[in-house]
Length: 149
Image (cartoon, rainbow, N blue to C red):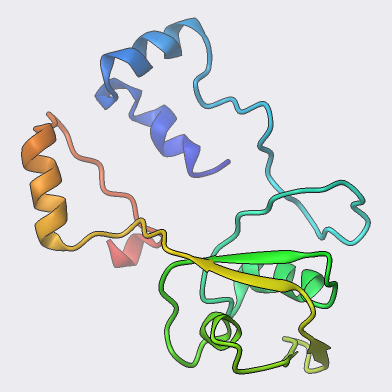
């Protein structure tokens, strides 16, 4: 997982427990989590997929959604806020019964759609309060794109 490279690189700023565990074993090795390469069409095993971007407009989440959305055995959990006009917003508010796939053809929406409240973002006040309480020696900011940092 590429994002874990950030944690591996900055192990020296992690708390003592993580630094000790890192010397004994790899705390970033997950037994039941693996990256998804390619598509899922031939997979017959149950799975949970976590993909971004969450608005379902493009990217891996959109590609996977198009593969999953026509089967009523599948479920999609949207986590939190979705912008009006995005696919995520339209399906979470039951505005549509079909979507136009990225290749142009129509797909019937048969999968189950649930929305839960889960946000990984905070505002300035929340971030400042957290930093003041934790008082870290170093702060590493991670964002999706270098230009948006």
